[in-house]
Image (cartoon, rainbow, N blue to C red; front, side, top):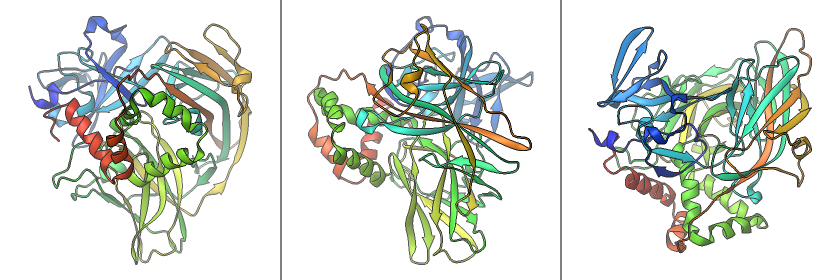
Length: 492
């Protein structure tokens, strides 16, 4: 069995924004294991393969399944990503996991180690038949001082009898505090596309252009991976490249819209799984003082700003976007963090007034393990305003029947707290009447934060912490070192 298999790990699908620990499980220890199944793969060649029920199994370094009633087999070394579904009583969630993070190695899907996530609630949309995983808001808001607004497109939401229904759950070991939940309902002309920026400004776009080329720092063609929002997701493992670098480089090429001085990059990207895990690992360097340090940020605006500035400077949780101009590469925008299980489309306006020629080239330099890219597209200008109706919740009740609608009504000091990983609430909204001849997209505007359940009693490690915060590249080196410890012998 290869080192890859010996170090492979599968998220049980109670996982999400950020992993916190590794724990060996037997099938007998997994609650209702029949709910989890391997539903498909993405190969390293870029092929998407969906499996017939009951799904695939993994043994002897290969995956076996049936595809369109025919036997199917593929070596695990040829697989880039596993797609795993958890089906609950009325809720379904499918997530994609890179093989080095998520491969099962001992016979069946659930006979492997488990990484449980920490951070942000899950939001499920009612699609007319069941609840489907549709959003994971305010990831990274690990204390009240970092509380933030989030805007999530609800792709699966469908009105039933004039009502939209959402299910809000806490499925991890943390306390989540939700301050606000409302819907933003956008109706617009057919043939347009509506996208939100990170601040919730919704605008429509037409004549969206696809990538004409995309390559990484080693000359690999990324166009098949970044052309469309699909199951082909580019997410490098947290290991050094052939030249020893821990930072990738992705150059995106588009036809430059004629006479354009502004363009909007529509990016579908998310924080990488290992990068999510590093949030907690870095916090834990404060040792037994971790909780006190987080609490101190609540009344320290300068400290909050320093964290945001560090995340962008290192490219770990906010990634600069460079535009190629006559004078060289110049930063003109940034990718916000999100996910990692669900990537959202984000609109990012870029100044291209200094670009010459018929091509527009953009450069991203992500540290390995911290980013997952699905697709990029380009629209001329900054988009057009769209009619948006804000819809407040008409009801909000917890599983035990408690009315929490007033807790979610507005941005204030009232929160709906979810301290246990069995907490959940159903929130309903009256659907505005449809407008003839127009399309509709619904977004969730939510606000909140979450409290990690920290149990680290060790002494603080100020030397490592100071290095991460002050030495360029130290954060990704720390992440790569932890990845090597977690999976000794892992190879690209």
